[in-house]
Length: 330
Figure 1 (tube, rainbow, N blue to C red):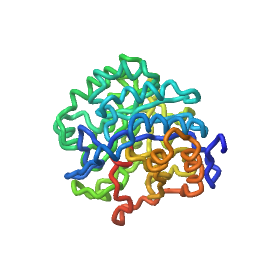
Figure 2 (figure 1 turned 90 degrees about the horizontal axis):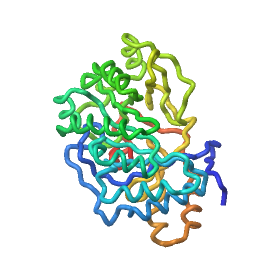
Figure 3 (figure 1 turned 180 degrees about the vertical axis):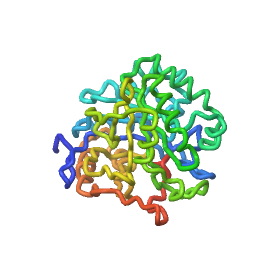
Figure 4 (figure 1 turned 180 degrees about the horizontal axis):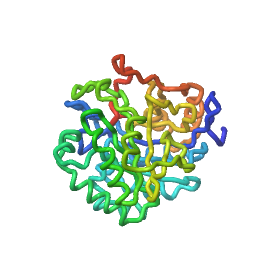
């Protein structure tokens, strides 16, 4: 059994994203359809199974685990999973992606459990627009959650903003200014064509990272940063501040050559690529071999032979990926 996951393109897999729920208290237009059917709870990996999965990945050389959803913090007793993973030897980074709606009460316990960094989804600072994009009216709750995370003292806090043309593209400067004022980072993300949605035409709403950067540079000076997180973001330092601005560009600047990650859905499918359907049913293996890590680790190792070279996102066709982002796991 190898001690490091390496795919056939010689990429080391050191990062896994574990989705703990497909449910969310928001209904973001680029993430979910108008009418969603969520998985029965019996199909979800239990918290114990998720921790067991974390153990297997760490023994195979993974050093970073991100907990995602849906909205992970609405899952019952989720703090137990963070506490368990946070104690695992060999895990260097336990991180979280959240919409911040639960952070007022959970930021400090998460910090104490070992969470190092938090990414927070926030696409707009305007209440009416927030309600339209998320189908909720919880902007103030999110802003209080961001303040709670800052006060708790996480190593890094980053805003993730999906930019849609004629929806929120006119706010990129305001969002950068918000991040600068808070002393946190921000990444702008091109929309990814996952799942069929009816709220907007993805091709018409596409707003490229190059255009976002040009918009920002009308008000701020950006300098390419030497810092990296081994992820898809290309970072720039905002001169005169502590803030970094990142750009995640699956369409305009493919980042697949350096891919170091896999994802596990809330029902235990290991997805080998965000934009492909290659997967392995780890839930079946876990439940068929209770208490035995060897078959689970072997299945993960074997799957590396099928990790594709790149995604195939294309706005000109019907989405090849019918699962929604809440199922994929952020």
